[in-house]
Length: 382
Image (cartoon, rainbow, N blue to C red):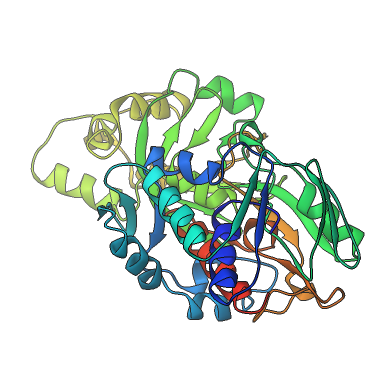
């Protein structure tokens, strides 16, 4: 097992339960490093509402088999068996009450019970056909090898392209990798326009690649972040726009009509500030022709203002890169793997699971559920 992250540990547990002699080789000093930093240190370990449509892949059907075989309730059962307290934060997201270390400790205990051998601080130099794994601790002979090396995201905790190099070595096709679930940066013009709004957040609809997410958006010193933007970023491609509805579900024309009927004498900016943070509303009207009393707005002017707020076109300059990306999009082409076993069709005995594969979950525990499900599935056949 190359990689001691979520997918690798789950696969090791399952293979060990079947009586297989399993060695986990992890280049970091401890296993589960990404687990430990996830969810603000509390690990958003699954999502109760996991469905195939929460995953992005060149083959949208590939993940269905594994997700059906190991469901969120299966992982929750393990968590409860180990007495780990947890809570649902929102939208089906489950977090540890205390610490992500509880999840890592649970996985380590399960590995020990299954007879899994751990080699931490051990670097893999290469894999030879057959299979022989060359490591800093010496040469390991294996009947099969599972690549659970993760992606390129968060290099500060040790992300490397090892898994992709192994795939290429054995002739497997790779789909272009990219940062996913990542903040977007402003182009030069928008950076000047929206300077000073860092820290401002609002509930929006963010749309990219035909997919829309209604969650909170956050202005940063360099661009946009927050759940809505992170979600949209997985579908965004350079050169494309992200459309942001700053007033989702709000009929501004109707609100103005009601204000007029009630005899309210206020500016349109003040009215919009009921739905947007004041700093954002102020800047928006500074950039879009200023504010005027609602009573003096012509219908055409009001409709134009409403349209601009409902369809803000953002042309990102780029992303914050793998340093800030939660996961890596792209990776090992799913067409090269069995969706049931995760074994490479061109290299029997070689398996790829987790983030290294071209399956990317939405924000909110879905990527961990993919790790558990793909690791569990492969563990039945390794």
